[in-house]
Image (cartoon, rainbow, N blue to C red):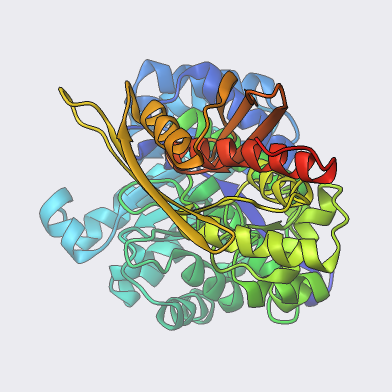
Length: 515
């Protein structure tokens, strides 16, 4: 296969390193469910766990090894006989299996954690790989904290462990310390200075302590790495691991730069992300690349107009490709007329220019009060304009309602009637009652309230409250009024006035006496 078509193996460690995230504790069934989804996703290797740490972890590795097919199942072990023996036992039912052995090599780890000299570290590493190789075909060796290990010593350890039988050499940036240029240089130096490096696959495992894990992983691929270790959603210890979905989609989107392929089924990425988020309890941040809920959402009017004209103006990935669904034009205070009109059309509304102008103005007023305008909000805004062919006899100009414990609510209202200002105040048993009694004083007549209903149009603390009233005048005329607002008292007053105006409009059309 030519270099331009080389495959990069995806080694998923969500069930091992990902589960080491503080607060995450997956049971055997949950690990199996994630493993099945990872196999469906198309990862090449699943690191199922670290069996020596607990019987639960060991059982999960056994079950995954016994049930999951089509991928290599891997288990982690320290360079300790007990660890390796338990891990090998757990893997025995897997048709394709790998033992991953690690031993720290950096000076700080040798001095403070292991308290061993270089020669002893080298001896243990070689012994561990030989022990594993006698019992399993695939052996991966990781010199822990490789990015902070002296290069000459690192090159020697790699050479000796390949001689001992390691088929994969993983280079971990254990504490997320390195940078892209530095890490690529390290991978290239390994290829240049380890004589037998072509007998093993070079892998990388990057942490995100400086937010560089994905960039470092991609730089390593350009430097010659052919396996990338990563996790779904970037979960993992401390700041997490390199995010699998970001690595895969970066290589897929920038084929001109990363001339490699993976075996990942892109359309299953979002489904996998949601499953891992649900079972780990780790919520994906909204602005997370590829899988965050805002990854394909646009609120800015300029961006919305661009996406409607040509998706690629503001989207370099099609949301459908990763199983996200469609792009979302989020209606909010930054949205423009094009997005508003497009959303109205999608809901089935065909608006005249006049109705569109009025609906858009109402939408902008609502979006100043409400963080996000949902479809149901939009329906209320549009329908309130479509139904508004009624000439307004009365218009609300000012409303103030004060309500406190142990005191009757006080309402102050100012209306405009054909250019004349009407003002009044009054109290009632509740804020709505106070407002309605004050309205009756202003109008000069009392309407019988036959029905009053209020419902939440959408969700959240800033949800629209829609009020519908049914009133009857002394002459027997009846009308229904409706209005929606984030302020339910305002919605109640405007719905009442809507009914009053409808009665006036009908009377004037029929040339009958007014209310």
